[in-house]
Length: 522
Image (tube, rainbow, N blue to C red):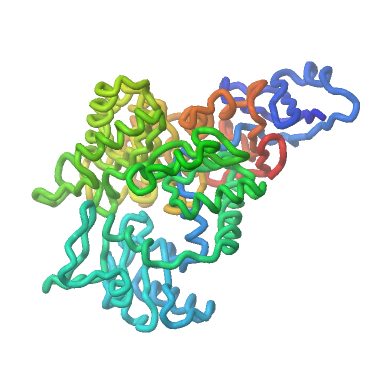
């Protein structure tokens, strides 16, 4: 049975001009064009769907996020609206009371941003030691750092003589005693000591997180760093038909190097709605937390430039493995020194192996330079920009980076250099709201109203391409998704108003009225 979509604008992303009608059949697009021609293709029993003047366009393709991380965040204390230490303690106290958390059980909170707190600094273990019966961790909004109380430090085995791990730092007071603040690899080890929830509870949380992506118009979602336990849960969900969006997972070539080898049915191919896309590595941290690795010192610092997560040789070996395995690799780079390391090591691995390119993706690319973009284009590298940094942390970047902060997320320069790029929200760092990213790409205005480099603005249409057809290209799926063309999958959304005709500010209030995956409303 066919379904005709009519009486609305149909934004195909094949051209800036809308079509009049679209026909879907068995999950595929069969026709796009003039309404009269579409009517002639219908038979008795076919359906006609009135768009009521709304706009039909491709579903969003997630450039980078963490589906299972969003699921985890659902069970945590939410600190995103806290503006001082007192509000943090009140939120945690209420959570413990309302959920009857027993003594000895971990209490996890997420979303605080020290740059938005009145105190303008990270809390310490002394502050969190008000919770004397439970190990407590609060995760920074960036996900790159956090604070634990004394019980938490004990659970993690962190003592006064514990050395800093490679690629991370343990915060210490003036006497050298750990003060509870942990960043990068010192912080991420916490996942090894917090007991995971029961599987059924985990499945419900993942379904709830997926529902939020669908509600926001995403038809393809990424899990940017999957562990073995969560992979097995997703795999079982996929086999049971419990996933509705397509989910593309990436795993560490260091921690889970054989995950793709163990799952050949999912290696670069979908089971039902799940596949393993390749590898993911981190090269540095976050610019707002001053752990991103820069080529020049942070503003106000004599020599501190952040630091790398890996040596050049380690990164070269990651790149070599990805090329030899013919698997894509996503590389977290916020600082321009990290960008340089990725480019150099990939070029070296490419020359040494002689393997064909794998569309490596520079994830975040906050401070990538114009000369580096030219190098990326020559290597067929892609970029996935976390452009919402412009609004949420643009003011902090101006403080931390000086004039370099005005150049963050250089989308227009990437387009001019010939680098294909996508957009993302790095959820759960930010909610999966692509419209805010599209607005940020076109407006480049900070939270305080400061306008960052206007030459790096792009048009709304270019931003929509980054969220749709370019996203499909990032997953090697441009022949199947990302635009509305006969033969492609009917992954579509109905939105209000028309994003190409509304005022720029209206993009922040865009409504997704319906999300359609493979022809079915989800």
